[in-house]
Image (cartoon, rainbow, N blue to C red; front, top):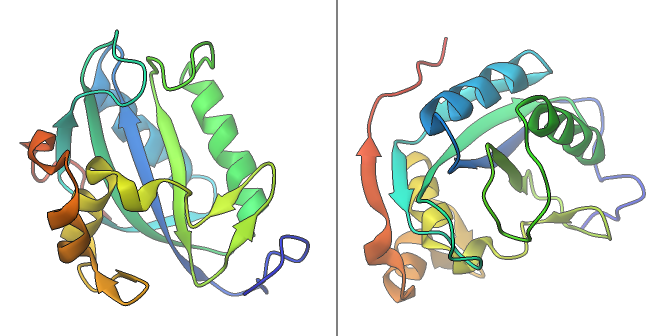
Length: 177
């Protein structure tokens, strides 16, 4: 696997998976705005999952989340992509006050090709993705062939205790052009 120093990438397009979520204000609007802003910053969106509504994880004193997963391509290196994601979150009013607290938008890099990064700023694959039905259910919608240690997503989802709390909210909500 690649080290975090060189990001394991050259100047070619890399397949990436990103999760997006919102539980403040016009939640669906924030999801759409995030995708539009990412697309204007070297992220080529290929597939977008349906939106799912879920209970919050961690800090419980907040509203329900809308969550989706995006399959995309980019020439950006992982840390460059993270910088753009942080900028988009800031532009959309994200405030980091309470860990796992309410937010206008939350954008996470789930997978970046076959790169593994484990440093203070970035962890790829996302460190908790395999434990979260609100990430894996929409990920399974757009690419059911993804595995973790040889185990298919559908099997991993079956084993998650919170899978019943992931409720379909809206199907075709974002058109990829």
